[in-house]
Amino acid sequence: MEEKRFDPYQFIGFILIALILTWMLYMNRPEEDTSTEVQTVNTEAVTEQEQAPLQLNDSLQQINLKSTFGIFSNWMMDQGATTQVLENKELLIQVSPKGGVLTLVRLKDYTDYLDQPLDLIKEGNNKFNIQFTTKDGRRLNTEDFYFYPSLTSDSGKQKLSLKASIAPNQYLEFIYSIDAEKFLVDFSVKSSGIASLLDTSEPALLEWENTAYRNSKSIDYESRYTELTYGYEGDKVDYLSLSGNDEETAEEVRWVSFRQHFFSAILIPEKSVNQLTVTSENLSSDESLDEVFTKKFGLQLPLAYSSGEFGSNFEYYFGITDYKTLKTYDRDLESSIPVGWGIFGWLNRFVFMPLFGFLSSFLPHGLAIILMTIIVRLAMSPVTYKSYVSQIKMKVLRPEIEELNKKHKDNAVKRQQETMSLYNRAGANPMAGCIPALLQLPVFYALFTFFPVAFELRKKSFLWADDLSSYDSVLELGFNIPFYGDHVSLFPILASIAIFFYTQMTTGQQTMPQQPGMPNMKIVMYLMPLMMLFFFNNYASGLSLYYFISNLLTITLMLVIKNYIIDDKKIHAKIEENKKKPKKAGGFSARLQKAMEDAEKQKKARGKK
Picture (spheres, rainbow, N blue to C red):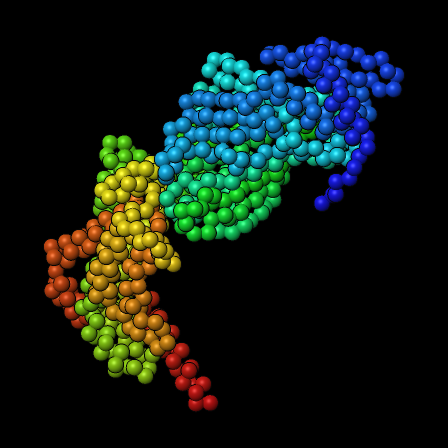
């Protein structure tokens, strides 16, 4: 870091400008010094409508540019250049003349988990700066300048111009503007008339840093879905680390999103940025009520030079992280929401999101979850039926399989051959129970990604859950249990109980051979409900409600299939009939069995040698 050194020229310039401005403020009329050594400053009185520029000679301009901005800006503050307000149906925005930075961005229709106004920007959590270099090698920062504001309104669109002037027709300007109803804020930055001062070999850098406030009861859960996302060429999307600190340099970037789970601050350049740097820092550590922030996000991008001046146009999106809302802006911003990749994302975008949106339009959200779960389980019932039939067949064959295992316990190849022969003659397939489960996996995972990002669930109550997008605490423990939390959620308990009984029913139909050196699979499967109990205690209660209802329906379907659709005796008779049929020659099973026999012969031959 460069050390600060005393600059006599800067000090002299500082004194000169201070004297000039003091004289101007007291006399309130233009004065001109006829000195032949230094040309002084011409000023005009500042009215409410226009700003008086400051004229400097070339040498003073080169040496004391930063001081000029600072002293002249203090004078402007004395003339009434105070914090400015932009407001529409969705947003309340405050902009400080110092640095032209946003000091407050409030979403007017939303509150946080403490029912306080939901502010994406407040109390200094937002830093914005443009850094540029002068020809004498100085790096200047707009965060040090004061800007003179001019607020106008036209056809419901508010426009705020902020100018930091150096001399007539020489200034930096920020422009913010908003429409009457949108979450979008237009923003542009440009320099004008200062090309002779700028070193264009060094890029002018826009720097934005935002520290994300906690907005949910569970800071741990919120942090899992709070991340920096950016879109780049070819509609591709990338993310920084969720759990740690991360930094990346990206090219052809179309937008950068500072996503705070259900709320987002997104910067959208008018044109793709050739190269920028993005950073993310994890700030949350536990479920402590004292935790205020979740993540710190940052970006740095170069501004384009044109005819020696720099400037660019942007849009800010300050609003809800809702898929349908973001999609209406037609900027691919909805890609910042992690709805799943491949078939999982396809299911969410084209099946579950439209279905849930339709159901929740006329039903309470808890009932909409239940009804959607019923529809999904009924749609998957043929798969459940095939899976259960396969389990019944395996149950019928279990005694014979156990007998074969004892008979050929010292000959693994022979045991496998005889077992496959039995399956073939009985018309059973041990994989038939696995395939339906694999077919259900895309649905399972798609819904697992859908519920945590479903904005519609936020602050929607059902039964004892006051917010389906957060946990449904029924008991506060007063102490923290590692990996569990400091509270007890009821829906995860109900879901775990349902999973336990479902596991009991399914494993009871299947043979679970214990292999030497391998863990007992029944024990592993019974651990699943316990694992879910811990994992989902801090998750959205809407997701736990779905799993509870889903497993309850699956158990009900299996009982109906077992007691009213499937006849065990008929299946057993069919298997016995199949076993009496002559074995067909050829086929995959025959070739596999022959290959196994050949392998066994080769093994014995090598053993004799």
